[in-house]
Amino acid sequence: MVRSIKKPLVSVIIPTYKRRNKLKRAMKSVLNQTYPCVEIIVVNDDPSTNIEDIVNVPEEVIVVNHNENKGPSGARNTGLKIAKGKYIAFLDDDDYFLPKKLEEEVEIMEKLSEEWVAVYSWFISSNQNGTKKVIKSHKEGDLTYGLLAGDKSLRIGTPSLLVNSEAIKSLNGFDESLTIHEDWDMFIRLLKIGNIKLLPKALWIRDKHERSNVNQFHEGKMKFLQKYEKKIEQLGKKNKNKILQNHFLDISYLYFKDKRYKKGIRYFKKSLQYIYPKPNYLFILKVFIGLIEGSLKINIINKI
Image: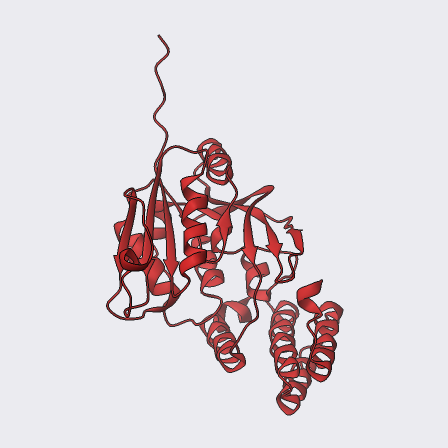
């Protein structure tokens, strides 16, 4: 008789806020996984509703309703506190997994040495017009510099990741003071423990949507840069300039797109202070696209 090998439990944490229909799709994508040992934790961050009253939640799904709004990082942290899995996966309520995501990522993690604490995969970006595109990354190992620089060739988000539970819990969760890049911050801290492996397959789908609050984006960028100011300095002038140039051009793009041209120009000029040793032409092109988008009221970036 062949004895069956017990597979490790994976805890999937789904933070949700006022997205009833998309939450159903997200939960269904986890329930339909080919991997059999899954714990699903839905954390409702809308204190005005009770998930069980508005969504038919399967019995196997654990639901936590927040009494106060804590944001996506707070909701993920709530899930982390009760998760029992050897591995943790995250899924935003507007995204969804393809059926073999967990199976293939667990298979990779079980074969890796202890120097690797997580694996991440490619994803499919689904635009509002229905266009779908595979978003690829080609980097693994220590991704710290790429995360600090906002490297466009490094495409990794929380739904990409399958992470060792002990490693991520040792970091005391996500930084709830960050309004954006809280995922990059978590990955950077995680990389102090071990490396992140790449699984070059598209295993989840992201619904691409507009960023609504430019001021929040700007404030979040500055908080992120302030938190890693010493680390950025330690990387040397050349790398520091690349990092700051990229972030200021990103801010400039969104101000231009929002028709706030004075601020767009201000941050474009600020980026020029860090142009040495060479400009990032991809980010500069994005800024001019933002100027066109704001002037003509069209979305070019979301159609690319």
